[in-house]
Length: 262
Ligand code: HXC
Image 1 (cartoon, rainbow, N blue to C red):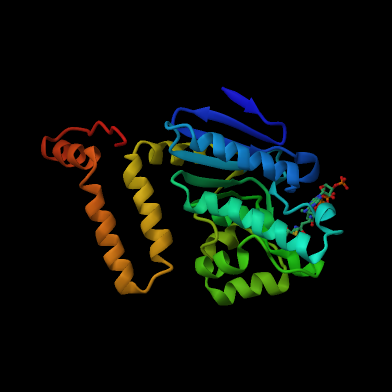
Image 2 (cartoon, rainbow, N blue to C red):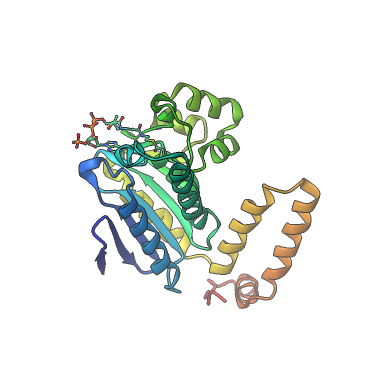
């Protein structure tokens, strides 16, 4: 079933929800209405107990998301600019720290806030025509939706600084080389590959997926000793689930497990 929120379209494929930013005439630039609808789409998806994986992509063949809407930002005063930074940081944190696994299917330009949207996702795959970058410096600003923090954690501080200080765009192959995207496929293959990856993850037990995200995301912010203790705690928590019992029993009985997501 396809639900159109106008600027954001969601479509459900069993345990996978496709979220498409739908403002192609502006290269899917994120204005307040689009951001509001993206938030609403995520809220609706989180309320659906069946969804385990989300794919985010952009409508049209040119852009994933070409950034925050520059026309909207241009007249902002400092407090208004701070507000839009904080509000969208919180929205993107719902993607990174929420229990759903997010895959960004980057189908063209992923610039500024568009690259930051992809950075908040768990996995990024790109079409070979994609162009990624943080061009904010060319507008006299810095990134404000997380790139100064997520990009160095992903690709290292030196490469992140180069991208942000030059504002230069890189292509999909270069992005894969520095670890900014996991995989590059042809534009024709992109959505098929995104769905294949999403379905293979959605076939896994939900609580283990959630705990892997939590262990990585929260562990990265801890010192190693605390992080190992945290990992051990989450590992122990798995043994409170029916799926741990089933997964191990199925292995020993030489059969496929029947996950209950509990
Ligand atoms: C508003 C945008 C836009 C954006 C594109 N458009 N990007 N509108 N905000 N970020 C609009 C154009 O104005 C144009 O509208 C239409 O989309 C098509 O774009 P063109 O420029 O005509 O296309 P093309 O020549 O192919 O160039 C593509 C492009 C270029 C290289 C991607 O559009 C571009 O440089 N866009 C800006 C990229 C950018 O700087 N992003 C970072 C923004 S700052 P019309 O009406 O003329 O047809 C940011 C900060 C977020 O994201 C954090 C805030 C806290």
